[in-house]
Image (cartoon, rainbow, N blue to C red):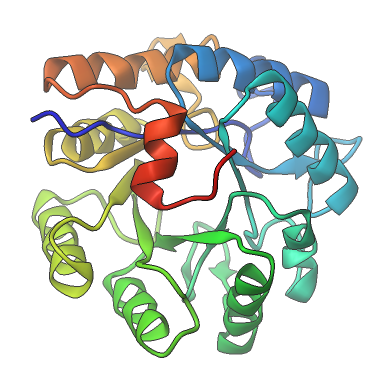
Length: 277
């Protein structure tokens, strides 16, 4: 297998704190430094959230702008992917950073249960976020927490609400949502290839200890991999991850195991059909 593997690093997220792991980058300066280390280790996509001065998740466009500028300066060519996730704000505030024209942004096209709440993605908000991504030339990454989300992405692509072939990321291991199940994973892969073409790129993310499981399944199956402290703060039961870069290096080792080169940022942009850096 020789097709390059794109490694996405989800650097911060909305939930992990310094109490969970001191390596979690909270301030913009910490996030830029941590992303640079991960970039040097092999990550070509940075999936980004921002926090307020108390460390709480927000959708502040100014903080996103500072983070985006810092990554672009210190990690030339790296793909910047901003989160429109629902833990950071409500309604159209979730897309307030899209006019910054990041390379990519996450797009959840349906609702599902989270551990203690419903992750609400109502159709009118999904349509608005998708239309903003078209307006500002931002490629959506479809975060699929359920099989129905893959079919909804296909419907949106067919009717023009998503312009290009969707880049689907399977998210598995969130409590009360889709568990980590190999047969389901394989069916997800089959479904993406059936709906979008056998060469359509896709990605997978696992939560907590399932991060390494999904990394291996995705890399060994020809997909792309997401890692990072947003989804998992540990190397194993006994050790905290010392950095985002350490988790990226673990994914790189799996690429070596399965004889897949790690995609450079240039290759990642070509695979995903993104504009030049």
